[in-house]
Image 1 (tube, rainbow, N blue to C red):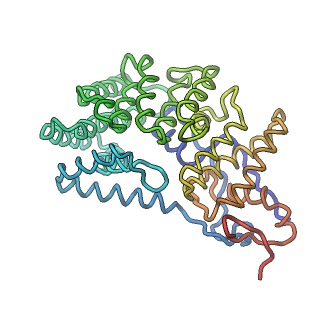
Image 2 (tube, one colour):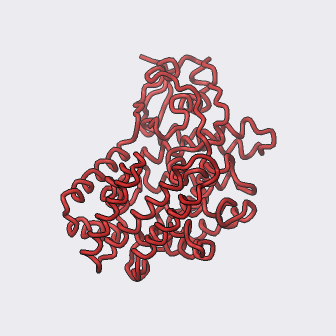
Image 3 (tube, one colour):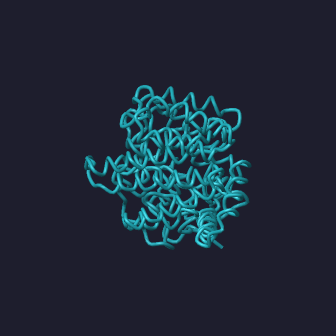
Length: 401
């Protein structure tokens, strides 16, 4: 029988969406810890016969979409870009994997700025923001131009704040962050997300809460506006959840009530997925599920999150989260037997009926995490010498040949 991989701390680490959010949150994110990855191609000693990809086709398509609109912005075709952006925003168009097309278009239009911020080339980034300000001046009546400029200021301010190591932020950097938040608020002007029927504007306005004096007072109302405008979008839940933790505007005790309220607001269209998304985001920051978390409701929410698209991108996100939860409960002396059973059964069902390929980018420990999940689900079959193949729906085990 193959040995079960040992993954220290696996229960405290989550898959791509929450890790991406934590990256955006700079110093609030925990330092990632990775187990040594196995060599690609030798998973389970060569007994896995299913595609193992570095990333998903959905993520590749997102990047191609960004590149298309980055080229449009570089060519100065702003009227066309804003028209397409406005239509995608109003229609709530979703790209494969569930990401909003409007967000991808906006990210493409800001791709040059993003590269400068990654290089920490602050002067070049400010020059790019000045260019976007000129664009906004030429399209003053267009809320999409206002969004783009406001978001650019928020990107710059947060990048400056997140670039500083350690828990403290130098005074001048903090002031720069607040200054660009104020500029973002001014750029949005009188455009109201509700009146404009614009989830994109609502998301940009929400991010102001990090750097305005009334952030605590506004964050819940602005989250509700954003989520109500696009109730099937997971991003409002992922972003808002972090601001309900003690580092921002919430408490650990109150977090459970907030997560359940979010679930009730969107239950009519997304089941209980909002509950899971809140806890995905919180766990990435805290290192564990918040107090009072309902493990079985969390698992049900993960399943709902997958079934909303049924794509392999989300299939891997959910498989990775279930695996981490499984590992954590197996090591926790206080875990309820019923919780362990529900997680085991759900992971088993998900791997056998939903997974058709593996995306390494979705798994914190990459091959090691995948191997752990497979040994938990197919332990008996592997002990008999069987291999794992693609079946009609998900994965199946059988003897080779």
